[in-house]
Image 1 (cartoon, rainbow, N blue to C red):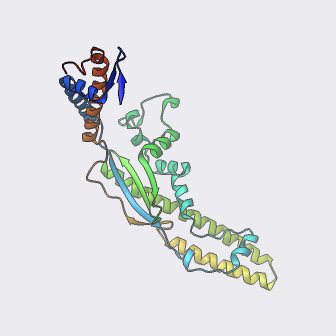
Image 2: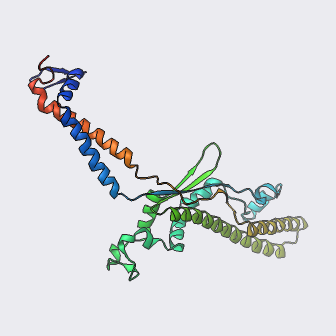
Length: 290
């Protein structure tokens, strides 16, 4: 490997190393200088903690215990949506959705917490008087989904990790558990609403249908809906079961101060080497005295 100095003379890697060693105090000073600055800056960065819960798709009677045979097709022809445990990917899509994140932020009153620097706690109002300068739900959604909240599905097991990164370890764990609880409650409420509407529709149809075969089918659908409603109402963990709830972590995940300090020191060495080659290479210091 060769580089060229200003005089056009070729400089090998060995020449660069010899040149660097001749100016070793400068290189060493750069290492410690950059490392000290990085260490000082890292001390100003707040500690970030990770609250993480492990969940699994819930198995309920809607999937395993109730068999309708061909009634699903008849229900579809009648325009009825039979409540069943939604697909895991759809449930996770709800968990990540803007509407659901907004709901969580509103219910937990997180706006003053997420934007604490812009909130006057003593007056319980935003510091900025202009509404256009105040944080809104869109700002909260972007902050929450990009820097705080993460959902990861393990491809081999199908298990899901719900993670919250925050400055307070207790709060990180609390939010992770609360958002799972809210998701189950939200999806269960939607299932109950769907089942209720279906029962109303089926009962109305039963009153107007006189054909014996259709009435029997409607009775079977009504029975299924009633059983489904019973299961949904009694199942707290409707969409996901919590296998391992989040607890307050005892160690931070960021910043990694030792690593930052080391990387800054290495960067200082590299920059010092570049400076030495550019500054002294044209004087043939790399080979002087050989």
